[in-house]
Amino acid sequence: MPDDTEKTEVMNPTYWRRDGWEARVLKNEEDDGWAVAMTRVGDTEPALVGPWTMGRDKKNPKPLDSLAFTTLVKTAKEVIRRHEHFARALLHKTLTYTRADGVRVRADLDVAADEDDPHAILGCFDDVTGEALRKGRVAPNFKLSATRVDRFVDAGE
Image (tube, rainbow, N blue to C red; front, side, top):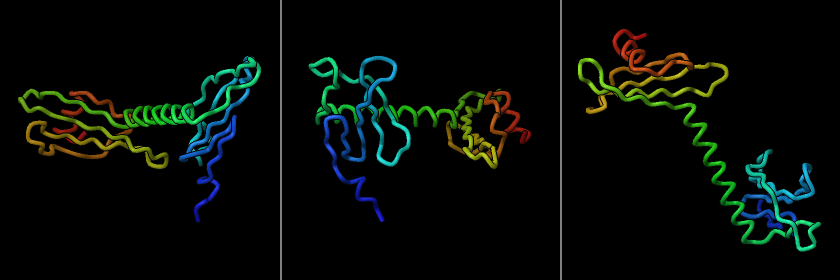
């Protein structure tokens, strides 16, 4: 059963919850200023924490408003997208090269994010025809190089 509190909109000067996101203005412990934390509803850690503007009295934070909230959501989504892209890049590598026999090879190494069974899958393809040359399981720390891929394709190493 879905939790209705996730759908409830809250729009207070220092806390907003709307569209699956929460913005919380907090006292910055490192100085006299303020910070804002953007968290997706349901996540335990904020996706974005940044400085927040002081109000006119130079003591209290500026109240959150619709424009600021929308901008913060957009920025937090971009931060998450970049983190996901970086994580994918760590788990997927591609190498394209030409073998001594003139065949252009594309090798795709995909590391499985599995703590119980660490491994990677190496797929080697003719880059021109798309024909699979060889695909198989390798160590998760397999070094993707033309020499290693040639050995894998030729001898199954």
